[in-house]
Image 1 (cartoon, rainbow, N blue to C red):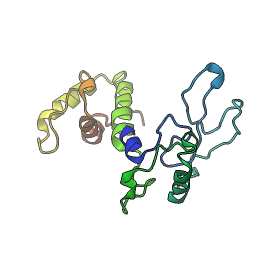
Image 2: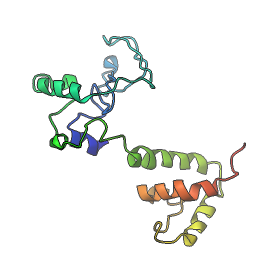
Image 3: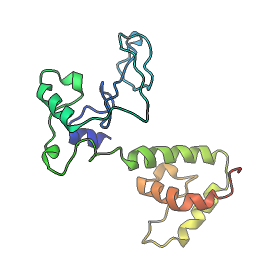
Image 4: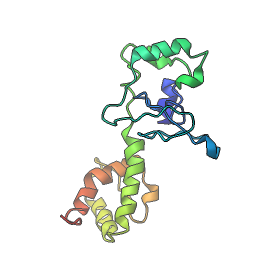
Amino acid sequence: MQAIKHVTCLKGHNALCPCCACKIWAVHDAQKGCSTYYVPLHQPNGNNVELSSWDPHELPYHTEERHQAQLQAIYAKPQEYGINGESDVCKIPSICLFSSFPHEWMHLFLENHCKNMIKLWTGTFKGLNKGSTSSGSTIPSTFACHTPNVWMEHHNFTAKDWAFWFLYIGPHILKDRFPK
Protein backbone atom coordinates (compact mmCIF):
# COMPACT_ATOMS: atom_id res chain seq x y z
CA MET A 1 0.00 0.00 0.00
CA GLN A 2 2.83 2.40 0.79
CA ALA A 3 4.51 1.79 -2.57
CA ILE A 4 1.23 2.37 -4.42
CA LYS A 5 0.67 5.56 -2.43
CA HIS A 6 4.04 6.96 -3.50
CA VAL A 7 3.83 5.88 -7.15
CA THR A 8 0.34 7.32 -7.62
CA CYS A 9 0.94 10.49 -5.52
CA LEU A 10 -2.16 9.77 -3.42
CA LYS A 11 -2.18 10.60 0.28
CA GLY A 12 -2.84 7.03 1.36
CA HIS A 13 -4.64 5.36 4.25
CA ASN A 14 -4.65 8.39 6.58
CA ALA A 15 -6.26 10.82 4.13
CA LEU A 16 -9.80 12.18 4.15
CA CYS A 17 -10.40 10.17 0.98
CA PRO A 18 -7.99 7.29 1.61
CA CYS A 19 -9.02 4.62 -0.88
CA CYS A 20 -7.26 4.44 -4.23
CA ALA A 21 -10.33 2.76 -5.74
CA CYS A 22 -13.46 4.46 -4.40
CA LYS A 23 -14.60 7.92 -3.25
CA ILE A 24 -15.57 6.93 0.30
CA TRP A 25 -14.77 9.63 2.89
CA ALA A 26 -13.05 9.02 6.20
CA VAL A 27 -13.90 10.50 9.61
CA HIS A 28 -12.07 10.97 12.88
CA ASP A 29 -13.12 11.56 16.47
CA ALA A 30 -12.18 15.20 17.07
CA GLN A 31 -13.68 15.13 20.58
CA LYS A 32 -11.06 12.62 21.72
CA GLY A 33 -8.23 14.59 20.11
CA CYS A 34 -7.65 11.81 17.62
CA SER A 35 -6.15 12.80 14.28
CA THR A 36 -6.25 9.33 12.69
CA TYR A 37 -8.95 8.88 10.07
CA TYR A 38 -10.93 5.69 9.59
CA VAL A 39 -13.55 4.63 7.06
CA PRO A 40 -16.80 3.29 8.52
CA LEU A 41 -19.50 2.08 6.15
CA HIS A 42 -22.03 3.90 8.37
CA GLN A 43 -20.70 7.23 9.58
CA PRO A 44 -21.28 8.09 13.24
CA ASN A 45 -23.24 11.14 14.44
CA GLY A 46 -21.35 14.26 15.39
CA ASN A 47 -18.10 15.87 14.27
CA ASN A 48 -20.08 18.09 11.88
CA VAL A 49 -19.99 15.26 9.34
CA GLU A 50 -22.81 14.85 6.88
CA LEU A 51 -24.18 11.40 7.66
CA SER A 52 -24.00 8.87 4.89
CA SER A 53 -23.94 5.13 4.52
CA TRP A 54 -21.96 3.17 1.99
CA ASP A 55 -23.11 -0.07 0.43
CA PRO A 56 -19.90 -2.14 0.18
CA HIS A 57 -21.17 -3.68 -3.07
CA GLU A 58 -21.94 -0.30 -4.67
CA LEU A 59 -19.09 2.01 -3.66
CA PRO A 60 -18.67 5.22 -5.71
CA TYR A 61 -15.50 4.50 -7.70
CA HIS A 62 -12.87 7.02 -8.77
CA THR A 63 -12.65 7.90 -12.44
CA GLU A 64 -9.86 9.33 -14.56
CA GLU A 65 -12.06 12.34 -15.41
CA ARG A 66 -12.68 13.17 -11.75
CA HIS A 67 -8.98 12.77 -10.98
CA GLN A 68 -8.01 15.16 -13.78
CA ALA A 69 -10.52 17.73 -12.52
CA GLN A 70 -9.10 17.42 -9.01
CA LEU A 71 -5.56 17.83 -10.31
CA GLN A 72 -6.59 21.23 -11.67
CA ALA A 73 -7.56 22.34 -8.17
CA ILE A 74 -4.92 20.44 -6.22
CA TYR A 75 -2.44 23.18 -5.52
CA ALA A 76 -5.18 25.39 -4.11
CA LYS A 77 -6.75 22.64 -1.95
CA PRO A 78 -4.42 19.62 -1.53
CA GLN A 79 -6.03 18.52 1.76
CA GLU A 80 -9.52 18.35 0.29
CA TYR A 81 -8.78 15.82 -2.45
CA GLY A 82 -6.18 13.49 -0.92
CA ILE A 83 -3.79 13.93 -3.86
CA ASN A 84 -0.19 15.10 -3.53
CA GLY A 85 0.35 15.90 -7.20
CA GLU A 86 0.32 14.33 -10.64
CA SER A 87 2.29 11.10 -10.86
CA ASP A 88 4.72 10.73 -13.76
CA VAL A 89 3.82 7.04 -13.89
CA CYS A 90 0.24 8.01 -14.78
CA LYS A 91 1.45 9.77 -17.93
CA ILE A 92 2.20 6.36 -19.46
CA PRO A 93 -0.70 5.71 -21.88
CA SER A 94 -1.33 2.13 -20.74
CA ILE A 95 -1.62 3.12 -17.05
CA CYS A 96 -5.09 3.78 -15.64
CA LEU A 97 -4.56 5.21 -12.16
CA PHE A 98 -7.51 3.54 -10.46
CA SER A 99 -7.34 0.10 -12.05
CA SER A 100 -3.61 -0.41 -12.66
CA PHE A 101 -2.76 -0.42 -8.94
CA PRO A 102 -5.14 -2.82 -7.18
CA HIS A 103 -4.96 -3.60 -3.49
CA GLU A 104 -2.19 -6.07 -3.47
CA TRP A 105 -2.17 -9.71 -2.48
CA MET A 106 1.19 -9.78 -0.70
CA HIS A 107 0.63 -7.19 2.03
CA LEU A 108 -3.11 -7.44 2.50
CA PHE A 109 -3.40 -11.20 2.46
CA LEU A 110 -0.10 -13.04 2.71
CA GLU A 111 1.59 -10.91 5.35
CA ASN A 112 -1.53 -10.12 7.37
CA HIS A 113 -4.34 -12.64 7.06
CA CYS A 114 -2.14 -15.73 6.79
CA LYS A 115 -0.35 -14.85 10.02
CA ASN A 116 -3.64 -14.25 11.79
CA MET A 117 -5.08 -17.51 10.52
CA ILE A 118 -2.02 -19.42 11.70
CA LYS A 119 -2.29 -17.85 15.15
CA LEU A 120 -5.94 -18.90 15.27
CA TRP A 121 -5.24 -22.39 14.05
CA THR A 122 -2.15 -23.01 16.17
CA GLY A 123 -4.06 -22.36 19.36
CA THR A 124 -6.31 -25.34 18.62
CA PHE A 125 -4.45 -27.73 16.36
CA LYS A 126 -1.18 -28.84 17.99
CA GLY A 127 -0.18 -31.27 15.21
CA LEU A 128 0.04 -28.47 12.64
CA ASN A 129 3.79 -27.96 13.07
CA LYS A 130 4.71 -31.64 12.62
CA GLY A 131 2.94 -32.05 9.29
CA SER A 132 4.20 -28.74 7.95
CA THR A 133 7.82 -29.35 8.93
CA SER A 134 7.92 -32.94 7.70
CA SER A 135 6.47 -31.96 4.32
CA GLY A 136 9.45 -29.70 3.56
CA SER A 137 11.83 -32.51 2.60
CA THR A 138 9.39 -33.92 0.03
CA ILE A 139 8.89 -30.66 -1.88
CA PRO A 140 11.19 -30.16 -4.91
CA SER A 141 13.36 -27.06 -4.55
CA THR A 142 12.11 -25.74 -7.89
CA PHE A 143 8.74 -25.02 -6.25
CA ALA A 144 10.06 -23.24 -3.18
CA CYS A 145 12.88 -23.25 -0.68
CA HIS A 146 12.44 -25.31 2.49
CA THR A 147 9.54 -23.73 4.39
CA PRO A 148 10.26 -23.02 8.09
CA ASN A 149 8.22 -24.65 10.85
CA VAL A 150 4.97 -22.66 10.91
CA TRP A 151 4.43 -23.33 14.64
CA MET A 152 7.90 -22.36 15.88
CA GLU A 153 9.29 -20.08 13.17
CA HIS A 154 6.33 -18.23 11.62
CA HIS A 155 7.98 -14.94 12.65
CA ASN A 156 10.68 -15.74 10.05
CA PHE A 157 8.20 -16.33 7.21
CA THR A 158 8.42 -14.13 4.14
CA ALA A 159 5.48 -13.45 1.83
CA LYS A 160 6.80 -16.25 -0.40
CA ASP A 161 6.80 -18.69 2.56
CA TRP A 162 3.27 -17.65 3.53
CA ALA A 163 2.06 -18.03 -0.05
CA PHE A 164 3.59 -21.49 -0.45
CA TRP A 165 2.37 -22.71 2.94
CA PHE A 166 -1.13 -21.29 2.52
CA LEU A 167 -1.63 -22.52 -1.05
CA TYR A 168 0.16 -25.88 -1.05
CA ILE A 169 0.97 -27.19 2.44
CA GLY A 170 -1.87 -25.84 4.59
CA PRO A 171 -4.80 -27.43 2.74
CA HIS A 172 -3.30 -30.92 3.13
CA ILE A 173 -2.35 -30.50 6.78
CA LEU A 174 -5.72 -28.99 7.69
CA LYS A 175 -7.76 -31.56 5.75
CA ASP A 176 -10.38 -33.19 8.01
CA ARG A 177 -9.36 -31.09 11.05
CA PHE A 178 -12.46 -28.89 11.02
CA PRO A 179 -15.94 -30.08 11.94
CA LYS A 180 -18.23 -30.50 8.95
